[in-house]
Image (cartoon, rainbow, N blue to C red; front, top):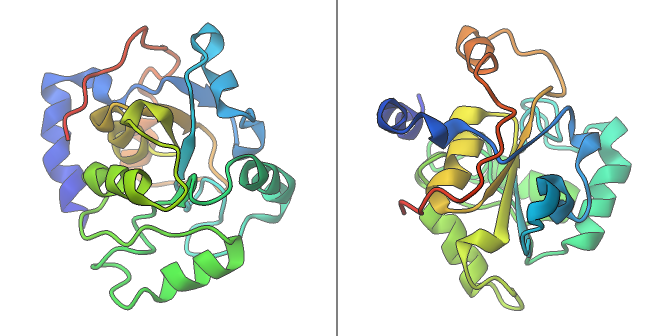
Length: 203
């Protein structure tokens, strides 16, 4: 159970815009590089990228890049090499779902990207993400608005970005169809609006 998502769900009652993405793309293969091109005329200074794993660039429960996305993934890695690229997954690297870091280690090995080890699942791990980028050797990140979060979940990935005061890119169509009723309902929410200004950071 994702306690973080459950608790943060109540924030949506007060601020529904927390789950609205700044940009929407059909699939990971449609991700514009550099990512600043995803936000129209706004052109933010994106210096670092947070990547979701399951149903974003990988089949759920697998720790390798989905083969049709290999070229796009390589291009992203070339443009944003570590320490400016970080995988944040609720199935790999969390103390509850991956207590021995087995999945995180394998995923990092197959992608050449660090995987965040975090005790709180998305969307509640924003402080850990920002701390990573601010203190990673060689990182050029100085503030949360230089980070973009890419993922397929409105209630975790997009909300995480908005709580951080970062940019969000919603991957509308996952690698595989997800029949979870909650996710099906989530995808019916309006997701094409582009906020003209940031939601202030709440971390």
